[in-house]
Length: 299
Image (cartoon, rainbow, N blue to C red):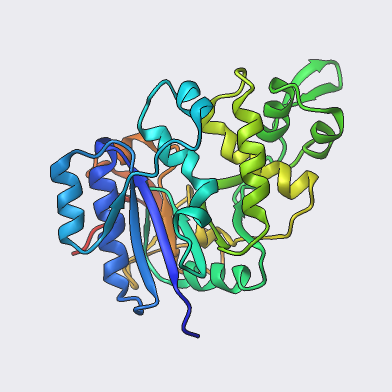
């Protein structure tokens, strides 16, 4: 298929090194010419932008979606990148498929890309559900009284905080989070329009954090409005419980059949994001405890 596939990420100067490692990891895969990469400028300096441009990467300022988004973001440039996620079909109107990858992620294999495209070709959202087999507890809750508990899952808690309608809140009860750090959609998918609708409406609610709005909008269109999606396997958005194969020299799934991880996502691992040499405890093939950096290493 002669499809045009756009990989998109972005950030500010604090994420320059991570963005560069993401780029190097993609280059290491030697993808076909069907793929192109663009970084959204959320506060990169001139030298950083010129560096990426010299590497053949488009760097564009996505702008603010509207006045209220700029006001809500208090001119924090990096939030432009987060808010642009629901407008990617408009920003890149000459491609067939769009794959978003957060700056704090990198690719070890191209398996995730192939899996995502198999889903987007059916006009479904490809996204990772955090109700995975790596979780010991799938529903967050808080003790209330005796055997009674209060549900505290991320989407339901946000819906309550945002004062959303009862039927929307009920649709999000005990629902797993859909991680907006890595996802893919066909450019012609109907999901985009509804994501923009909800972003615009949720931005008017000053009780909600701007950074959490994209994830809540995705939860609403999937769980309440029933737009089609398929949850990605763990290897497509791997965030914890690492295992290293000394034989393959690859990160592999913590559980059998120990498949190579495709995308490492350092969400929540602040030390690794800040320090390339930070060592994380993990297992090897024989369940021996070792320590290793989870940052991309081209060597």
